[in-house]
Image (cartoon, rainbow, N blue to C red):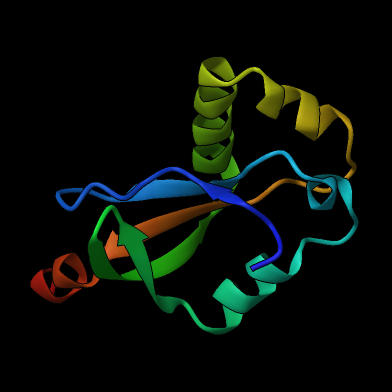
Length: 104
């Protein structure tokens, strides 16, 4: 994956995936990792020594704006990344596969 990804997954709840500073953040259109997750949302992530099956889902609309603003308040560079590009920087939710199965 060319772009560096930040934010770990907490097994008990969905967490969000955001881009970390890299030249790809400012490119148009979205970087390869985004298109890969959209095409293949069932993926595995590593958290420490553990591998976890998750489903990736893009967050849009007001929820995207709320989560992105929260991330920007924690890491002010995120607000700067958005100001430097015309595209909307995506926010991806990672939901553990065991949580997906328990919803049915």
